[in-house]
Image 1 (cartoon, rainbow, N blue to C red):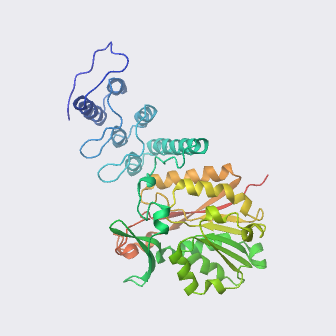
Image 2 (cartoon, helix red, strand yellow; image 1 turned 45 degrees about the vertical axis):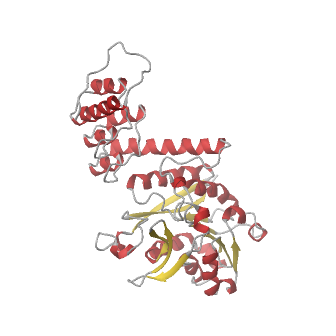
Image 3 (cartoon, rainbow, N blue to C red; image 1 turned 180 degrees about the vertical axis):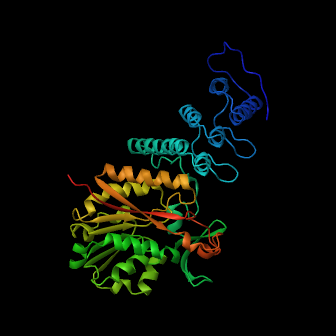
Length: 387
């Protein structure tokens, strides 16, 4: 590590610090934390201008270092001073991941809550601003112009429906140099659990009124149709032309009670065929290449789509699901935003590690890019709050 002398004690105000000095200060701060220097010494490094965003050659930031030494008070200090909560090191671990590996719940909760506050603030700024699509600090998906990160690029891309070498049904899209799963057969048990939780006995007896946004392979739609009493009305909103061709080839346009609305949900939500139904018993959404901001916007429409207190809303909870901290933040953020629109969420844990028998992703992914690498899926079922 690099040692530097502290600046004069009577220093106050802003000064210009060159790159070499910033680097030395950054190394010095990380080194002081890892060597368990007193908090007062850490504060001096910060006051002298040590950059809290700095990362060493291993990607370790000051917040990573505080997590390594399991010092929750220091974690709080760094966050209060503006440390980057979601920086990842060279192994793609956040400081929250480090805290979680040490079972340091106090530090983990501080980092997670910093992420939630950050995302809540960005959401508020987005709603108040004339600027469209204020980017999330969590995952800057807006910078990804490929089919995996841009809705417009995805809708103009070519999809491939096939079966992989393990007999798994997959729908994939080319994104940059990778093939990315739009929907894959391993999700089937998640969808089965979701349908079971969304199908209350009272609604089953009369035939559910169902809305699903995003058809994909048609896994959840097929499960709704396979219930002892099929849905009395089954609306499917789907914008991708290749998916619509796939649906037509599978005979979905001729199924009794099925209404296919072609287009983005943002445009279809006001379709007279939807508005005239008078509410749904089950509303589900599973879109591809949309950001959390899009999902948050959909949340605001949900109360007007549900038919009553026994109706249930759910969604594919897969955002941030390659990192435990990000997934936790997105899950809790969803809970808060649904609560804001009058919905109460019940979360159930579904073990999805069983689809990864070898521990290397081979059973689940084959040659496609992984989009859900955690062992547990958090399944949401939201109902209108009782007044």
